Amino acid sequence: MSAEKQSADQFIIRTFPVGPLQCNCSIIGDRISSKALVIDPGGDPDQIMALINELGLHVVGIIHTHAHLDHILASGVIKEATGAPIYLHEDDKFLWDMVGEQCAMFGLPTISLPEPDSFIKDDEALQCCGGVAIHTPGHTPGSLSFWFEEYKTLIAGDTLFQGSIGRTDLPGGNFEKIVTSIKERIYCLDDDAIVVTGHGPNTIIGDEKSSNGFVRG
Image (cartoon, rainbow, N blue to C red; front, side, top):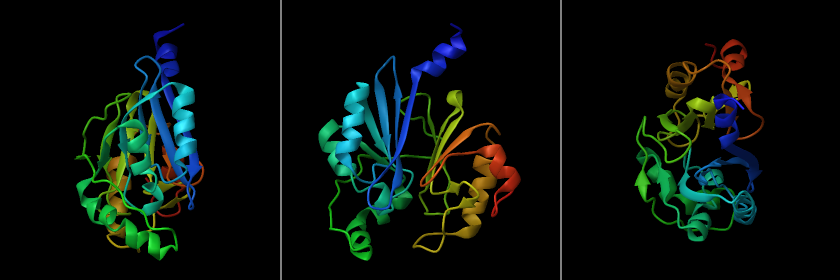
């Protein structure tokens, strides 16, 4: 088996919709170290934990592309179950603190969340699989994408979708900033890289550069 094949086999990614708004939650893991990241646990904590246990992974971080309620609802429960720290970009702390108001806005039961353990900075290395955080503001001020260069995989949250982009009409949204984020931070990555979106199907960076209805490369 080639070194390239061994490396690819080492990488675990499982993405599935969770919660009332069907946010895509991702579990990123390493078969050798058994370390894992939980990205955007927006609900259904039992489902998330069942998969973590099935894969035999040890969660070292709970990280968020942004702090809209559909991406954070189960964060506290996952932290309690795993002991893993919670990470967020500081510019989205105001949304994290407003989770009760966000729940009321959507008619959901109010929850409380623990404080984030640390704030992620632009270009900060993640604790697993060689990942790097990329600050991609626009959908929210603190929106992040997570780039796993070796595996040509980008977790884009609600910044980029198949044929579309994240909405910018909610508090903190900014259309000019999301366009700049996509053009200058995402479209410079590998054309054949997979984009895991915050909702709906995956896409490919090259496809979005050539055919996205909002931002072309």
